[in-house]
Image (cartoon, rainbow, N blue to C red; front, side, top):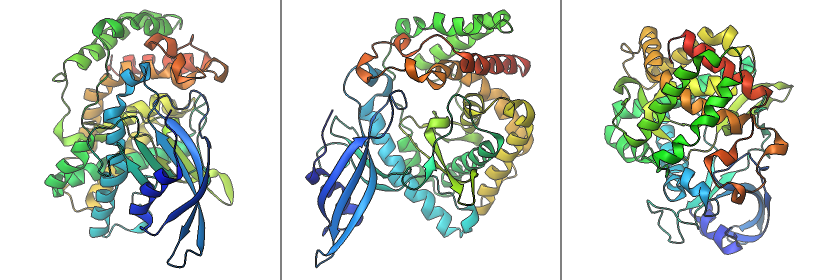
Length: 415
């Protein structure tokens, strides 16, 4: 793993904080626990800086340093040379254009989309310029949300309806801002959002991907209520594999095509709470933008609902949450001056029916690392040597979510 020194931090911070900034000292420690983030190495930094012409102003910054993982199997999954660059673009140019458009359109404070943590600096290589290909020296510096009292949800239990409503409403606005840029500033959209959505290389052969199919099918077979649907699940898995090798399959409907997070689950969002009620979330930040894509917005919505909500939320609130998504999506477009006549509620339902099936294999694959018990998590990235080595036998949380996924997808005609 690369090591950060004072000179690194100083050169990264100066473009944001001024050339007179001096890093006096800093401390570093791991930010995440094993299994919380396979795609990068995360460090919590306390950085003491001196600023001002008289060098008398001292400030402590609480930051997160995001580094690429050590070379090995994980590089085949995450393609850090590409995905580190994509994420830097999201935290810099995409965020900047979102903010600029909202300010130009005088979006009121209570509806202003503010889901990106502040970026304090970034590099893809040791070069001063941020190139379009990163190497093992890539670093992304972000504000430490934990110090600002943001917290993660419970990955195994999932989010309750209050947290889910906040996540869905802001996800809808995140998607809509991209579409607003596409409509109002097409060249800016191409130079920022579409650029960040460049495909990353999932570096597996078809044989390697199919070797994991028995594990996915087993997670269905062991659930008595789902065993009869194994053939449908296998078909969904096969379609997912085909799409990896033929990108022309199932292109998104342009009406709802936007930047999607592609990994929008509990651990990739953090909540801030009402100081008078620690159980009421009042703010949310999105993190981990390495694998953003240009695709149908509903894929993020469906992936989130079936990986990240607690028992009963989908059963009791699905229609409400889809309506909430639609209301926030169209409201955001209206605030930026876009025509929303084509974005009827029925058109969204049609888009869900068309695109939700494409998430079946993705959700099923991700339930294993999402629901894994802490004592079964790989302690080191170097322990992961294949797709099957990441995933233990399904536990109770995994079975519950897989059961809901399969039965709902069959009932809705998605598989």
